[in-house]
Image (cartoon, rainbow, N blue to C red; front, side, top):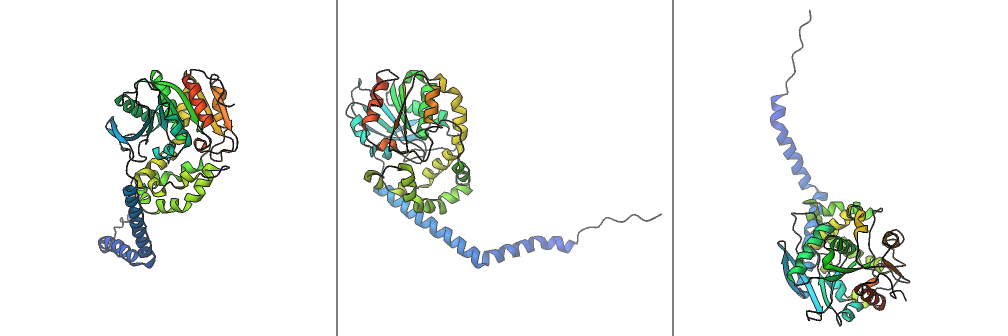
Length: 350
């Protein structure tokens, strides 16, 4: 009968020295030239980005006022008529943008001659807060903005949304139909289609890792890509001078980038969830897109939404891209007028 083989036990010396070996390897990594260069690069990029962000905030402080709803401080700019009887027009910008975008549009100034115009920095953008205690999908933002409008004494308004802002506008109309008299939807993403940028936005949207990226390499990379990004957004039209003068670093601050990357990562799921409710819309709707939009296919989104909403009207502007609100103001102003008149059809595309 063979003797049982005794179980082997680890060498006590090797166990004792394991942490020491790990510490020694970490120390050697910390002394390696590559690691030191990378760390120095991160520190330098963080310092440069912080300097640019601080400088732009001093040069471009908030242009409007603040209202608090649901414990969130929102920045908004108000223009135009102040009479209680004046029609209210609310403008909601897209992902990565801010209220300043609409302040540089030709139609905004003209709309303010006949309306009380309220332009929000959506949560996390511009100078509005974006707490981490909730997922900022379209319905969550709609509830927040509805509460903010109530604080401002607005009982009923026409909502104009651009790009990601169209989802929030639609959610407001569905959740609070008595508060929304009509919708003007510009260049929206309405249905879940492939978005490679949603995957690319995942790391910068993550806690901790994203916080580091948004304070170091992400703003620098996006600043380098800024001219090409503008050309993509406006093509086939030229980038207007008013938008060329927009200070890039105002849109490259950490909280702004967190809002952008979170919304980009969320957009497919947001559209998938909300698209099942589009037929609940009963308000007048005008859907508009730029025929040359290179960011979102009008056929896959705006034209498709028009097919689903029989009472809506669809206007496609030739020679215009994703930023169609910076094009000639007349078609947008006509769309606003027709929505307010309570008709889903008319002369907006004439």
